[in-house]
Length: 187
Image (cartoon, rainbow, N blue to C red):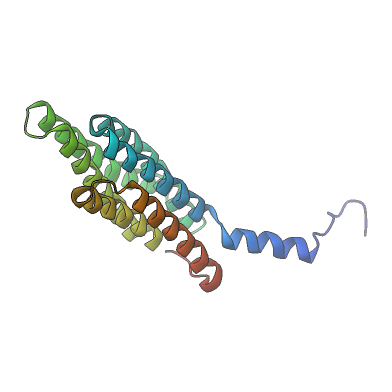
C-alpha cells in the first residue's frame, strides 16, 4: 500500500460500530431522552401542578427539536427539502403552543384550576407526540402512548409516578431489544 491511501478499517471494528449503531441509534437516544424528560414532567405534575405548566411549555420546543432531528435523519438523502420539513414541524408544534396558551388563559379566567391545567397540557402533549409519531415512526407513538398512560394514571391513582417510571423503562428496553433483534426501520 502506498502512504497516500487511507488505512483500512478492520472488519471487526466495522462490525462493532454497526452493532452498536444498530442497537442504540439516534432514534433510540432521542426516544430515551424524551421519555426521561416526560417522566420528570409527570413527577412535577404529580407533586406541583402549578409548576407543571411551565415545565410542559418548556418541553414543547424540546419535543419539536427532537422531532426535527428524527425527521431529518429519516429523510436525509431522499430528496426532501429541509424547508418543507422545518415548516411542517414548526406548524405542528406551534399549534400545540397555541393550544397550551389557550389552556393557560382558561386557568387565569378561573375555568381551570392548577391541577387540571397540568393534566390538560399533558393530554395535549400526548396527542401531539402521538400524531408526530404517525409520520415519524411507531416508537414516537409509544412516547405519546406513555404520556397518555401517565394522564390516565394521574387521573385515577394518587401515587402513580413510580409505576410510570417502571413502565417508561420497560418501554425503553422493549424498543431497544425490538430494534436489536428484529431490526425494523421506521419510515
